[in-house]
Image (tube, rainbow, N blue to C red; front, side, top):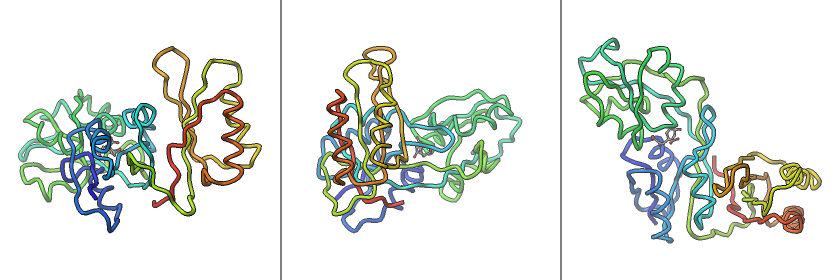
Length: 269
Ligand SMILES: O=C(O)C(=O)C[C@]1(C(=O)O)C=C[C@@H](O)C=C1
């Protein structure tokens, strides 16, 4: 089995891929952007992908959340990774020479205090490690701590530049095929209302509360066809096969919500 991830080697996604140890994985394949990571499993349903969904500073990684609403993808596992950044520059460059930084958007947002403090302008790249190829005498890259060991043309000028300590990103393992599990610890539902009416979100949450089901993630993404209409992601601390969960799904459907089980998995963090 192949595991696709956002490359090149050394990205946080690569670290998450290596942390996701499974005997069946024979090959780790880097892709050049997050769209390509998701596309890879669509055209190759035997294989799986790993992608960031949420960061403790930045929140949801929208490219991946939107892909979950648009494509036939199943979540088969999740894992968490600690995230620390360094500012990398060309060897010989000083901090006062730098006026611009480059990185993937979530990394720019997780280091915004550092960027503002130094009055840097910023530019986006497709991944943190990709940004190392874009540095020059005045441009630095924001990328995972420790990369100077494998990239000898750069040095780390500052370390741990994230806005808050204990920075963590949650990754999802994705497949175009459902993977049945004996006893799931978590399930993710995509709940989509067919029309706007008062108390939509309250009725979703009340239904889970009625059956005493604890939720670990609630997120909304716009339907994109009409302002003010949303898909709701709900992650529950139980299997989608539990009797109570089945009742929740039935009730939500009778309340005119479209309900899709995006994931039912045994969490591996
Ligand atoms: O660019 C990388 O190193 C990635 O793996 C992507 C990514 C992301 O997009 O969230 C993953 C974890 C961190 O939150 C920062 C960047």
